[in-house]
Image (cartoon, rainbow, N blue to C red; front, side):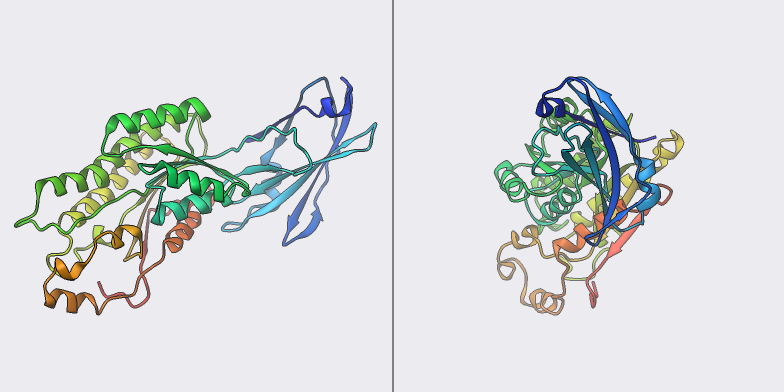
Length: 361
């Protein structure tokens, strides 16, 4: 049974050590308040209130896959008749948010998500989507300042973003990041392995350093982050690992023959990692969902970082490339992440391929 533990110092506001509160809950849908089976509870407490609300009760009335609803919890002080309100958001991750008037709530988000490559592109959009759903999100990135800027942008949302500087090519950085996560939140509920790189490097004349960099980020870092997250999922319910793969992990794109090479190999490896992790979880009876999410071409900073392709590709290659300009946006992938997260506990989306309409790669 899930318990939503709420702590407050309402007694200090009241000025009394023994206060009786009556608790009622009502659902809000599309801005319309719908009281559903209100349950008055007379609660006696001293300086600190500790109320346990059974989340299953709320879910019975409110859970519809792919949607989000909110509940309003009202605490009525029987003596002074003053009200304090708390809002509970359900869907894609349970979270709490206090009414602006009530300053004494100590809010505890129930779900912690870790997103790699959170400073830009798909990672940044995934972070935004999760924070807006009420998650506590830890964004791992080399450019910590950019994640901090994003956190400031999202400060009014139900969840919260925490920036963590981490170079995924360095195992010591990853281990330090997860030690910090454990110390701060005690565990992880969702891991989104998003960080990835690709370089224009052929197998016939490419550079070993480029190949190592691709494999370090796209394969080895995923393995390390997954291992560390799995250890922090031991005592958590409804955990989920989402690996952002690519259509290149399903087939070798027949476009500009000298364009990708080692990159598809890394994404094929990522699909194998997803399958292997899923098998391990089943064998060890760990109810952890594993999703391999494979986008087609996405307009991201990573693609823009390739620079002037005309200086690196032949005229024939450029002519062929110019025929295929349809792309996805990073938000499309973030929406897909929410979609798989919001499935019921008994549903696991193992593979999700998303391509822009008209793609011929």
